[in-house]
Amino acid sequence: MRLAVVGGIAGGTSAAAKAKRVKKDAEIAIFEASNFVSVGACGMPYRLSGDIHDPMELVVRRKEDFEKTGIKVYLGYRVVEVDINRGVLFALGPKGEEEKYEFDKLILATGATARKLGVPGEDLRGIFTLKSLEDLLAIESFMAENEVRDILVVGSGFIGLEVIDAFVKRGFNVTSVDIATSVPPNFDEDVVEKVPAVLDSHGVKRIWGVSVTEFLGNGRVMGCKLSNGEEVKVDIVICSVGFKPTVDLAVKMGLELSVAGSIKVNEYMETSREGVYAAGDCTHSYSAVTGEPIYLPLGSLANRHGRVAGTNAVSGNRVVMPKIAGSSVFKLFNLGFARTGFVEKELKARNIQYEKVLIKAKDKAHYYPTSGEIIVKLMWEKDSGRVLGGEIVGPIEAVKRIDVVGAVICMGGTVEDLARIDMAYSPPFSPVWDPLTVAANQALKD
Image 1 (cartoon, rainbow, N blue to C red):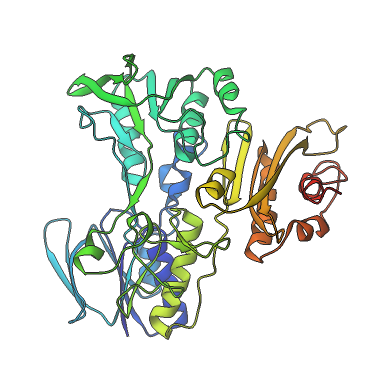
Image 2: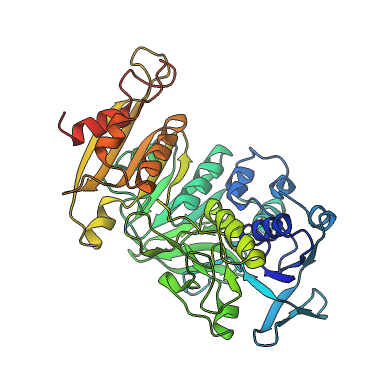
């Protein structure tokens, strides 16, 4: 059994490692176009903030670690062609050398690419995205070699807000530009109403509801023009306007695509071609709420995809990738943000009949010195009571409660089930009535 894995950041390395554990005599090779393998990319904003002292700490396992287990790693090798019928791929190495590899099964873990704005001046030096470890190192190198005081962050999703947090912590002047007027855009407005005040209190200049029309500079970026006519002086720009699945190779292979242009897979992570699997940010998951394919480029999902794809590639389709609630969490200064399932505006877009409740409570006993306000919003199906989604905003250590809501969603549970859960209580952790229980009880009008 010869298994080829294209891509070696999260989904690919997880797939290769699991495949090797399942079938110890399998010959496995990873082809990774970058110079690093098995990178914890979600930690990059925390390197920019200085919380992580060495960027190499983000490398979870090195090439040598994989090769000790018998997995061959080709670093700097870009796969340029795959002949499925013959079971052979061709890759170009860092010096242009060609590597031919014959395989029995193939896993595509080609990841995602950071979106660009597509405006004049976007190729000026000093304009970056933050998707790979190479991106991070390039940002750090630029900042070390140039005087930087004014930083522009375009986009206010999870990564954009984490980057704002990081640079404010280091004392830079930060400007946030976003075409949206409520951020982060994948939360409901009534849940994130605190965000503007939080950013303002930390000195962030917000210019929302506008877009960048042009970057200005002579070789190096020095400013940008906005759609409202305003010009902003900048020394460096971080563009964080989302990702798109990297599917060029899949398209050349004739594989079917799905939601958001991702590679179509079934419950076994197998593509439209038998014996070819996909994992990670290049492909999709299936929603535990509706069953539909949903595209969520998250590191946690990439690793889960990889385990399923790796198992099935070497042992047949015997493991199913579970439907997902789509739980995610991040922090902005002293606030945590978490969501799972579908938020209200997503339910409206799908014409799903729902009811909702939003409560504000203390995350700990009211008399405990560090207690703070937590917002919990629940959505559930009108007739059945089945939980459809949830959002939580509050103190950082409090918002992981979202996992309880996610578990209820994955089990097809109702708001009554949520209300019945025996939640742990101690003053440093929760009030006697946990905020989730309060929200569920209000949903039941109890």
